[in-house]
Image (cartoon, rainbow, N blue to C red; front, top):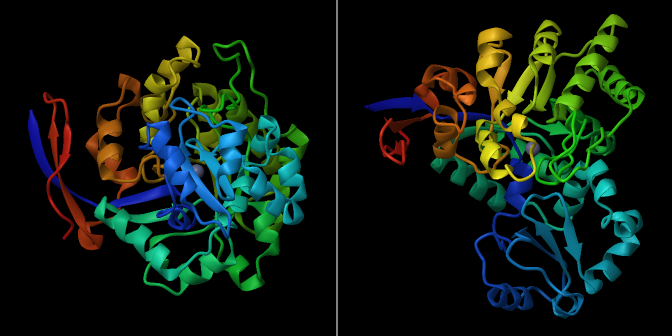
Length: 404
Ligand SMILES: [Zn+2]
């Protein structure tokens, strides 16, 4: 069956525009599968300043210490953003300003525990400009994204540029606690809320599941209950909303029980969100609903059930992104307390729709109406996209219209 409809542009509730804008035109190795070509490109980087290279897929190649140190000063970031390597010329330069990062970044658990700081550190290497911000928002628009909420403000300068640009109405800013504390009061007022982390990521095997990964390793929580309680309490005192990254069932349960404790102590927030929630079980879902927590989820991560088949225990493949349980059993309502975004992996309407309507498992499936309610602008006055949904062809979602 073929269906052609026009729908409003995306309201992407979880993205990183101030981060992605900085690196839009830096060297990206994602498509470079030939190591010789990667070596050549890295040789021609700027000799006078530290460059950031993104998209390195360790499945394609790695660099020897000698190769790495022949490059101009460089930080080469893993595709997942969950690790990077730094060559000696760059390390020599960076250890003055960032001694603890240079001493610890090679330790995966240290990196994970300081993940948002690592992104801010990378962002520090590049100057935000009006042009970079414009290029990013224009390219989002072309991909069908009107609004992209910024889950990690990279700094005051990016805030000022966006806030005095035509794009100010197309985002809202969340900041990590450390960044928030050093912002000037005017910027602090403009920040919507504080982003915290309860666990790591699937790609790095650090999302906190109740049982071990297929390699036998277990991932722990980033904080004790007391630490998370104190962090959330600090956010409440600031009067800001709170958004907690939690992927594994163990992490999600921790956030919910901490919220319950805060609530029974009379502590409240203007808004409470959990980000990703991929392995939320039915019990935790009911409790989250009762506590008024908004689930901010990414339909594109339904594909993790295929991509991470190697590391995820079999029962977890089916339990990833259980949208049917959340809507049909726990009573979450798309657009109200169930909202959708992409994390920029990748940006755009096409993957968002494809993975929502045609996910690997039936319980991950959203209807078109649920998609529009949870993932689109309120109406077509911000622009619209024509889509073709074809149940029988390989490419089931085809965007053929342009933005009006
Ligand atoms: Zn994110």
